[in-house]
Length: 259
Image (cartoon, rainbow, N blue to C red; front, side):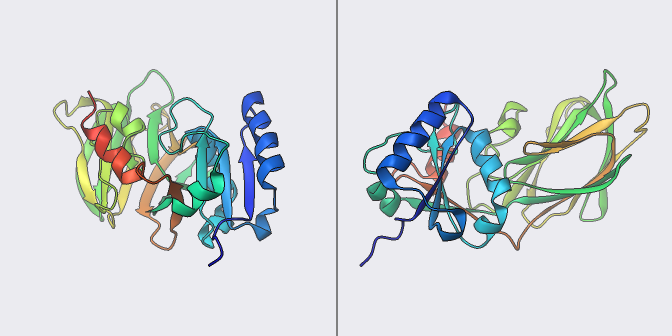
């Protein structure tokens, strides 16, 4: 039986050490163009992996998996960097299927759309706190959140910005989204909510001229936003590969017991 991942498209961040690693990997394993690739191997950090997903979304939507090799700082979504035995690692890798968030927003510059694998976050643009009206599935749930902002995170992204904002870590496959406030001032005791993966979350920015707000889908920022809609993109499945014994669900589970 032929091994599944021999036609590899290597990609690397702009950092000199990652570019050097790219040269060594392509010399050793070859390099094919994106149209002929069976797998993308991204060398860099979590941010580069997310950027790779965005830049090659058409290929990923068509079922081409991405295997990350960490040459960054955190590397939560990455595998350990090792130039040896890559074919064997790819053959044994476990897949994590992620459904991203689809964000649409309206603002001063009109309407914008983007996908987010980790989270969609709203943040105040000035010293003035953001005032947000939150609706879930068309029903008003919080008339006025006064905070630095708020975010909606996937399970895969729950250990990133969401965790830093004291949001919950979500098990992969739990079909849950985290709605988390960022430095909430009022209501002071509100710590967020757990929502079904099919929930439709809407934010109306109150008094946006005095209290301007930006929205960011992973690494794409849009400023002076008045309204944001967030839903799970059920028509898109992203396939990330992880080394055997270091699967994403295991990483997320370990994160819940970290001290």
